[in-house]
Amino acid sequence: MKTYFVDSFTNEKFKGNPAAICVVENSLDITTMQNIAAEIGFSETAFIKKISGNSYSIRVFTPKKEIPLCGHATLASSKIIFDTTSLNSITFKNINNVELFIEKSGAKIKMQFPVYETEEIEVPQKMLNALGINKIENKRYSPINKIILIEIKDTKVLSDLQPDFLSLINSYNGINGVLVTAQSASPDFDFHYRYFWPWAGTNEDPVTGGVQTFLTKYWATKLNKNKLNAFQSSSRTGVMNTELYQDKVSIYGEAVTVFEGEFKN
Image (cartoon, rainbow, N blue to C red; front, side, top):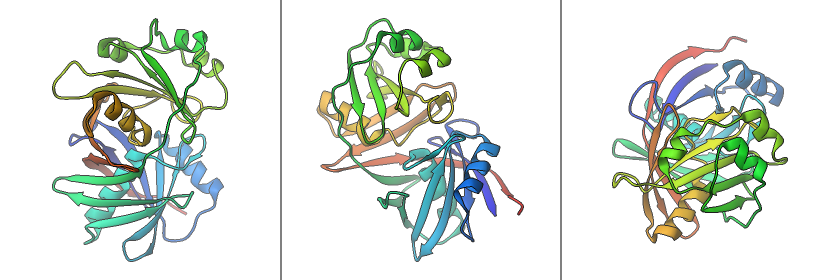
């Protein structure tokens, strides 16, 4: 099975977010896919299989569980398909039968994702303590993604966060992760963010595209604009451009392939 490592949301090797892409010829069972994802150990491993024409299935696994949607693994999968075929557009179908339309856009890849609403939520003090946050500006919850959003004021505080991940896991049950975000003070970006998800994946996801299903709308509403530039201030860093439509969000990013090999039967 052909397997690739791709750094997403960057044009530099060893930056952005690494994803493993497995090109499936014969269907794999869930246990095998989960074991492969755990063996590789990246935050996400995607398994893509051609259905017909430019239509592909995509399934995404963290080292711990299957998840329905992942931006950087979708970007990485698109990069491999575009580099190894003559296609200029792709339609992925995920485990929930959501169709994701992907196309080349100059040097970047444009992904069209659904938009999800957020709702009010109470965030316990022990979660804020585990994150190392003293004061928040706002908090919301994405029930589809099972992700808590916490807005703080300072991007420097955001980049300096060093959560206590054991305490973080124990601070809340039944979620996939916590996203912390702040408005950018730089004219190059509109907002910064980091995503912590020890409940479902690794401690921190280096660059996260899937959260734009609700994060883009959150900042578009606050900033009164529909085109935004985002910076993920993890240690690897990553950038992406997003554009909000009524019920869709377009995510633009680049990716770099760093490894090609084969998984043995």
